[in-house]
Length: 478
Ligand SMILES: *[C@@H]1O[C@H](CO)[C@@H](O)[C@H](O)[C@H]1NC(C)=O
Ligand SMILES: *[C@@H]1O[C@H](CO)[C@@H](O)[C@H](O)[C@H]1NC(C)=O
Ligand SMILES: *[C@@H]1O[C@H](CO)[C@@H](O)[C@H](O)[C@H]1NC(C)=O
Ligand SMILES: *[C@@H]1O[C@H](CO)[C@@H](O)[C@H](O)[C@H]1NC(C)=O
Ligand SMILES: *[C@@H]1O[C@H](CO)[C@@H](O)[C@H](O)[C@H]1NC(C)=O
Ligand SMILES: *[C@@H]1O[C@H](CO)[C@@H](O)[C@H](O)[C@H]1NC(C)=O
Ligand SMILES: *[C@@H]1O[C@H](CO)[C@@H](O)[C@H](O)[C@H]1NC(C)=O
Ligand SMILES: *[C@@H]1O[C@H](CO)[C@@H](O)[C@H](O)[C@H]1NC(C)=O
Ligand SMILES: *[C@@H]1O[C@H](CO)[C@@H](O)[C@H](O)[C@H]1NC(C)=O
Ligand SMILES: *[C@@H]1O[C@H](CO)[C@@H](O)[C@H](O)[C@H]1NC(C)=O
Ligand SMILES: *[C@@H]1O[C@H](CO)[C@@H](O)[C@H](O)[C@H]1NC(C)=O
Image (cartoon, rainbow, N blue to C red; front, side, top):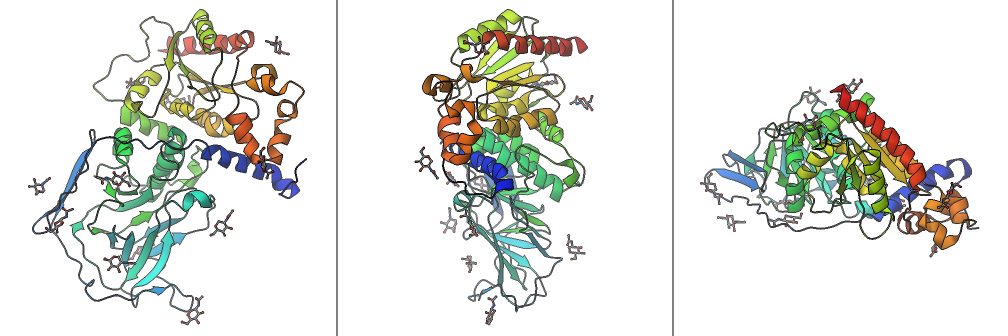
């Protein structure tokens, strides 16, 4: 047996957290290049115009130029030092007490210089240009490895109001779409859910911020155009490609708040927004008024089951063809859903929002369960050996939180490909927790990336039958 690093009581929790982290690292990241143009209109003489357009997303801001007033003389910076006067609490509020994220709220006029990621905060009481904070606006603060790749912003106070080339009328929200962005689960878990939480926290009145985003790659802007428009009607300002200075009126927020994995805690939000509210926002993004064909009726009149299929590698259903036949036999119309990084979310939404059941083995593709209709559909997560906690944390809890019927099909030893490899008496099957406890890379190497599933058709039929009856019930309610 390997040595245990943690103290007793807390070790199980720590073990699971670490296992989870390892799991995420494994999802890594497809950088897709898409030939969409982002043009930043450069007119330094008269009116300034910032245009950013992608296929689905266009916007324009025009304003009179205001030039940097005091940048000519070389400013002196002083690192924050305890002997200096404290910054004005009413102006700068940086909260670094959270395990998952840092957040700064600037309650004054600010000027952003994207060329060196510096935000100047006007504070008439400050004596000179003072570097007050450095912050990396991505909610995985506990992962040094990830955070090292997130662009850092510097917050500097200034007693003189600094001018800019583009004057905005709306407040700014600054964050990073770097890190694990590129994996659907992370795009939501570390991106859109925290974005929702942060906006509902910082702008409870419903005001829209201007999004200032680092690593906002073109594929991301395009893939999530409809969703991004729900968060802000303004063109997004790229922290990486823009060389103009921007002024914002009072209230600039830097960072994203996370309440945990795939979760929203209504008691921490001023208007008690919940995970269901997040699902509703997703609906607003994709429920176009034009496509108002009756979604819930399939052509056959039978309930539709979507089978989220994983390709290649691990956690595939080895007898998928038989499972499809079984589902048809039980009474479903079956759609195979094989998402890739190129899958259009609009198309995916259309399919899943009009389905009654989603079935899939634990994996990022189940993030599409966000598209199932609350109160009217069922998620069946097939859970391989050893990843119960991940299954519950990533998709079980969120499914219940948005009002889905949630069913878990936990496989037993003889349904796992690990049985073929190790034999039924091996510790890998007899006591997964003991195996993972001793060495984290085992969770990843054995249970996540080297395990597939051969579903027991007799047992699985009972789950499908039950889902079918529930789906029929939902259909009859209409
Ligand atoms: C730049 O902005 C000006 C003024 O709004 C406009 O006339 C011009 O067409 C724009 N140029 C480009 C390349 O967008
Ligand atoms: C913007 O305009 C200035 C002055 O006209 C010019 O020097 C600079 O190269 C332009 N930048 C871009 C990105 O077009
Ligand atoms: C603050 O500055 C003083 C002198 O400028 C220095 O002696 C002291 O160590 C500094 N304190 C911190 C916490 O950096
Ligand atoms: C923002 O500043 C104003 C004064 O300029 C103050 O009245 C207000 O309480 C501040 N808000 C916050 C959240 O600190
Ligand atoms: C950021 O860039 C501006 C303009 O080049 C420069 O004046 C300023 O010193 C830089 N700020 C920091 C904190 O390096
Ligand atoms: C992560 O970085 C922080 C601050 O640099 C440091 O205190 C901490 O020990 C690091 N943690 C790990 C696990 O390396
Ligand atoms: C803007 O920066 C992102 C990286 O942050 C890069 O992927 C993209 O190609 C850049 N776009 C342009 C037009 O330079
Ligand atoms: C999603 O389902 C709801 C409820 O049935 C429906 O009103 C909406 O039109 C559907 N959206 C799409 C894009 O099919
Ligand atoms: C789902 O049902 C609950 C309780 O019956 C109800 O409060 C909620 O509004 C429903 N949600 C939707 C989206 O229909
Ligand atoms: C797997 O094990 C279960 C329970 O022991 C048993 O009912 C089932 O027949 C087994 N399946 C196969 C294919 O051996
Ligand atoms: C974990 O297991 C892997 C291979 O099974 C091994 O290479 C590694 O050294 C182990 N790590 C620890 C901390 O025991």
